[in-house]
Image 1 (cartoon, rainbow, N blue to C red):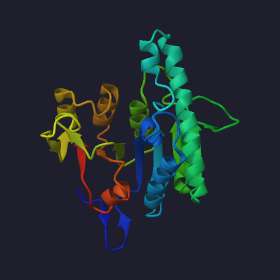
Image 2 (cartoon, one colour):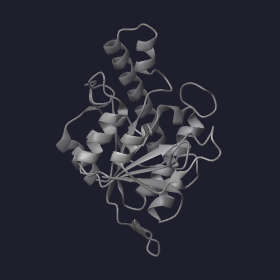
Image 3 (tube, helix red, strand yellow):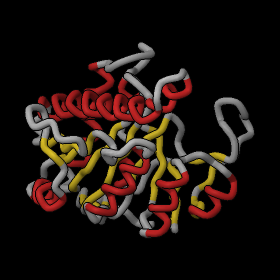
Length: 245
């Protein structure tokens, strides 16, 4: 897959979705937001934005509150999921502040209306923001309990007509087993969504995978911990796994 022209610094991707976990924002502190880490990720986003790529983002909330864990500890699942959605808004606002500090105009767009802090989700308005080269961070998941931010990323990517979803992980692709546990784990260069489901590789939840597969949305899994990794892939470099329909 050719993704760029390295001579001119341009890319064949015009609009992409970047999905990262909330845990990616907490650095080594184990909880909450770590401002230097947030800024580092914002700089990665800016480097791709500077190529002229229109960027959507979805950020998880696991660094603050995870609905499924709250439910497992006895909290009513719907309430726990709504709390998790609010955590994603906090992360989105933190990323917005970091991006705008770097001079990148950004909009936080929430599936749950909260007009004082962010915009409500209106698809046509969000598309217009992207056309004006603003980064759009979609917060509060899908606005519904029982759906993860993975599903929200797949849904918004399809609605925004993104050309691919970039999923930033702590590892540089998809492996047949946990590379942190198994040193002989094999990394896939390319794999189909059906294989991901059949092998139960847990890249995304099953609903998100099915949505990507049905909409023929490419998924690129890469390491967010690798400096320059996001832009590097768009420059035809780096290590990653492509999931295809």
